[in-house]
Amino acid sequence: MTLTPNQLQRMQFLLGKVNRMGLTPEEEQELRQLVNQENPSTAGETIGVILAAAALIIGVIVIIGALSKK
Image 1 (cartoon, rainbow, N blue to C red):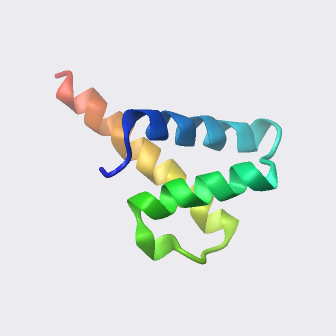
Image 2 (cartoon, helix red, strand yellow):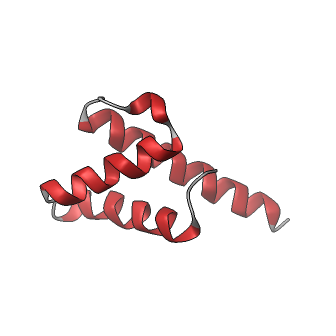
Image 3 (tube, rainbow, N blue to C red):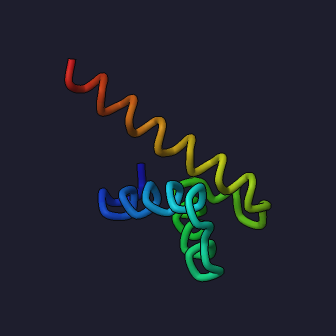
C-alpha cells in the first residue's frame, strides 16, 4: 500500500460521506487523487469506478488488519 494511515482514514471518511451527504467537487477530486495514488490505472475513470476502487482498497486494508491480529 502506498497510502499513509492518515490518507487511508481520509479515504474511508470520504467513502462513508458519499453515502450520507454526497461529496463536494473538492472532496470528489481528493478521493480521485487518493485512489489514483494507490492505483494509477484509475486515472480518468468515472466516479462510480473511483468509488468501487476506494471500497476495494478499504476492504483489503480491513481484511489484512483482521488477519494480522490472528
